[in-house]
Figure 1 (spheres, rainbow, N blue to C red):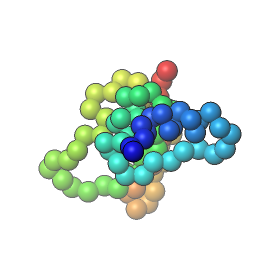
Figure 2: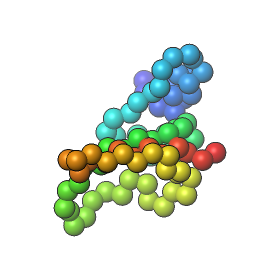
Figure 3: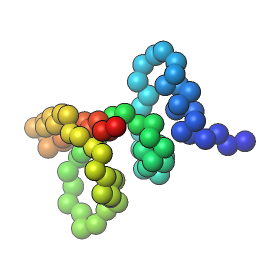
Amino acid sequence: MTRDPAATIRELKEQSGNDIWLWGSLKLMHSLLDAGVVDEITLLVCPALRRRGTRIFEDRQDLKLIEATSFESGVVVLRYVIKK
């Protein structure tokens, strides 16, 4: 039996504990964003030259950048909150 990921996240958020982290699944991330269960997004951006790629957010207007940290390696960490 397959469980609804958004329902699982809602249940976990009702419990006390630490943050919930998701690594690597754009399809799952989009479904959780659409369900309204995401509070914050942290992106680790590693620069690479590419002509095309997958859009992460399409045209979301509900993201607010709250932190941007760059490193000498060129990697950038971006933190966004979801405006409610």
